[in-house]
Length: 400
Length: 71
Image 1 (cartoon, one colour):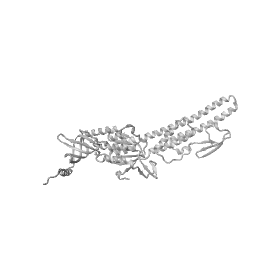
Image 2 (tube, rainbow over the protein chains, first blue to last red):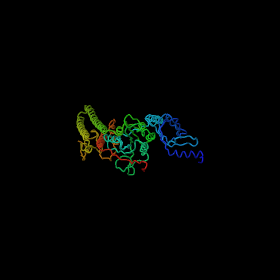
Image 3 (cartoon, rainbow over the protein chains, first blue to last red):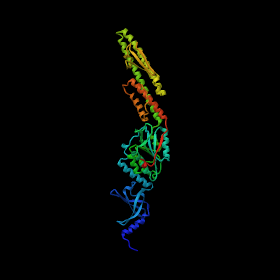
Image 4 (cartoon, chains in turn yellow, orange):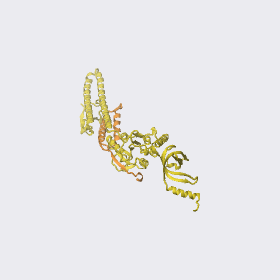
């Protein structure tokens, strides 16, 4: 048997090793990044240690010495040093303790970068017309969200992106869904007056994005604690609401979100108002308007009364003539009072049956003299021709 | 006093307009004639808003899952 050169021997050995894919769990130790490009570390247990090497860009989690991690890769002897190592393709924390540690490390890092800053959080529109929902369509979270949405509000359009919210690919799915709206303004040929109309089609971009899933263990919620998801939420041009699991679970996604909902149901509550609350507000606006209009009419009346009082003092001097004018004026003022009262009454009735088309038929009329609206009895003189417009026509009359 | 029905504007816009009308009546120098016009418009908006509050289930549409394959 011919002796091999060192290079030949290692190449042959590495060829054999390449067919033995490594999936190894151990405690991380001596973790170091070189030139921001390469990660060197060891995995160990009570008795043994193995060296590892990994390109830094493949790191998906924040890790630190002491954490229990699982690596997948290929065993290899590095020709230049003759040292055995695992060339790692993927590394993830294992077990509740390590996951918590990784979570804390990522949280600290993103916090330093300002991803959770309160001042960057955007407010949601009060009445969204379109909601982008990112969820697993089969989940209870999805049906809870839609049910609460329907209870509270109506007529809103929900554009659903069905994604995996757990397991491999979940983080990538969620990121793709979040980024979708940046590059693909959704266009729908719909006649509703929502979205911006361009060239006969309505380009609908959601007013708000909602990312939800039910509760679970820290391991189940990995996608919501992934750095790439956090960054995709941060980069979204549309405000994002995140509602994960039960109230006690806080995820990184929650912290980056513009609005953090405690559960998927709570996300629905945060996104749309309750129709009963809005109905009350509409009522309050109407009542306020009616009250102010009533005050306006009363103010107008007392202005006339004050004028007549002054007229009465003047009457001491030119009794007869002024008396006659005063009587005349008072009767005109009374007519105006009545006219205003009729209008007010009609207005108030309208509030009760709220049918605006009937409003004109409720006794509104407007009187013009020489084409100018009569706002005061004092602007008309005997002999003036009056034009009174009612709902169904015009009445002409002359002031006597 | 015309009561032309406008093309349907969004709920948000109508609601805002109603609130603006209520706020307008807070002003000191309010003209009665204009007040009546605003009042009528307000009643029309309120009736329209209430009608819409009663209406319509949520409309659900699915976006294709393969986001990256879509053009």
